[in-house]
Structure formats: structure tokens, C-alpha cells
Image 1 (tube, rainbow, N blue to C red):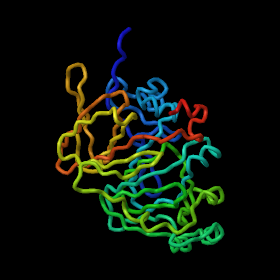
Image 2: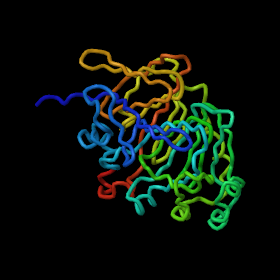
Image 3: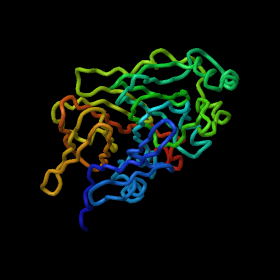
Length: 331
């Protein structure tokens, strides 16, 4: 029997969506609203859902397949926010599974650019409740309830399920669960905006005062190659300072790996058929490393290049994710 053709680092054609506040670009996605197609190589034009149907554990790894089935579990988006996004909230995995038969939507925002009027709204300044939110759900009434943060280039902010959030005058990389669940609470009084989903979202919202540490950017250790930004069951996210070539061995991950370029330019290089191949990652672009690849190199093409590295390592099986798989098999 012939050996299967080896998979390779996968770049995808982004899927843009115009909004009242700017442009949302799905860079890597397997959801109902966006299924990104492969850009190059012998898999070109195949969508990510198509790859999952055909290549299964070769794409995501045995453990991730047992946890999530044929659903590719992460998404990467680029949000080009020239105006102000709607105020939204996202459910956790349990609620999303029970109500929508979908994944929840924990996410991390990484700031690529921040304009003069850059702003993030994150959670509440003080403990509030559904009644107060309902009464003040208009542009002038909501703003005083919310924390307002001024973001800067390079910063990262974790947005946990239940946290209301919005952004203005920034360009963001969003790493999140593969979910379309962003429930709209307020469109700030825009007449041509989407209808709100406030009534549906009321019991999803965390009304407690957001802790001060949640309003600060995630700390980054500047003097190391790897800084750990997010460590959750939904995903792990690292920041890699690619100042010199890095040789990455995938055995320790037991998962696919996503790289998104937050600054500079990096060449991803691997050996195939006795030749050295490469794919270029520029700022604001993302690439998927299939789990079956054993190793590859990250080589900087610009000084000060920075990559975001996302993958999965759950501690245990989650009954609300791929519930048909018994826990003992998932482990």
C-alpha cells in the first residue's frame, strides 16, 4: 500500500465580511458563516470542513479528534475596526451546547494597530443586574456602566464567556473557539444596525464588577522566546519572539498548531521529498500546521517578528463537547 501524500502547512484564503464598523476577515474558520478554502498546494480550494471530513486526525491529532469530532475547534479572524463594534456577549461551552448545539466562544484579542480613538469596552465598572442593563440599553445609558480601556499595539486581552465587550478604532487578531455565537446586546443606537439579542442574552451575562486584572493586557515576558498568554481548556495561546530560527518538534503538542503573525514576517520551512519548502507569514496572516507534521522551522524575515501560537491540550473530556465519545476513550 502506498504511503499517503504528506500534509503541509496550510494557508487559507480569507473570507471578508463588511460591517457598519469596518471589515471582519475569517483567516482560519470552520463555522456555518465561514469555511475558509486552502490557498496553495495540492489541497488548494478545499475548505477546512472538507479537510476535516477527509483527513480527520491527520489534521488535528488523535486526542483533539476524540474531543471535538469533525469540528475544527478554533477560529482566527482579523477585525479591522474603523468605527465601533456592537456590544456583544458570548456563551460558555455548556450553555452553547444546550441551547445552540455549538461550541462556546472564549476569545483573545491581540492588538495589531491602535488609532487615536482606540478603545475597548470590557465588562462592568460595578456590580449590576439584568434590570439595570435593560433600562439603560441605549448609547447614553450603557457607556457609564462599562469599563473603558485604551489599548496599545502588541497588547493582548482575554475575553471570557459572559463578559460584554466591544472595540473601536483598532485592528485586532481574534483567536477564539470555532463559534458564530456573538449575541448582540446593543448597536449603540445605530438605525441601520442589526436587531439586538438582549432578551436572549440576559442570563448569559456576567453582571459582576470585572476584576482589575482582567482590564489589564495579558503580561508578556519580553526577555524570553516564549510567553504564555492564555492557558484554558478552550485553547492555549503563546507569544513567540522569532529573532532567530526556531526548530519546532510537534510531538509535545499532540495537536494541530496555528500560527498568526502579530508583527514582522516569518518563513515557515519544512522538508518534503528531499526539498526544502516554505510558506511566508506576514503581519495579520495565519497558517495551520497539521498534527501529522513531525517538525518544521520558523525563520524570521524581519527583525522583531512576533508569532501567536495556538493549540489544544485539555485536561479531561468535556461532556458538552462531542458528547457521543465516552470519557475513557477521549482520554
